[in-house]
Length: 206
Image (cartoon, rainbow, N blue to C red; front, side, top):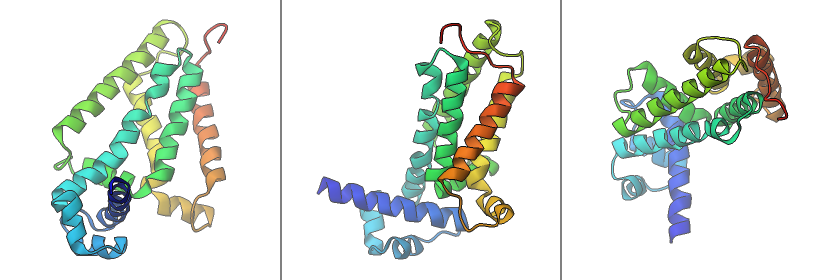
């Protein structure tokens, strides 16, 4: 039963991610989500209780990977390795959670009215940790003295755009959808710009 529940919850969250992304929170109907998920409408309430709780589940489906993406900053002492892995992780979120990423971006653009306080607190703490680590590397002479927060903003913008502005990117590339090679090329370029532009150096012996 637990496997069936987990599978159905995943199906519902993926369907809800798309509907919320396309229609917004207020205009989304649970019946539309149920239809896309190919499940009875009562299942939505059975598994999530309400549209509001389902919306939170959608936000959590992308905020958890966003929070986990900072792991390279803890795992690696070397800034080149950490930033390379971080950028790749952020791009993979855009690849694997395109609709949930749009829901998250739309929520932020509207002042985060439905974003739970505990998620806001965790994201804020993550930002402090990342900016602190960048500042430490600058103090060690391993990076140029740039504004740590604005460097993070630039990385977020350049990686999340592959989900949030997917239509524009696929239109410009003349294809229906992005493939693994597109994301790999994006990772290489963004990493090159960050590493080169910020004069990031590896730790001696790393």
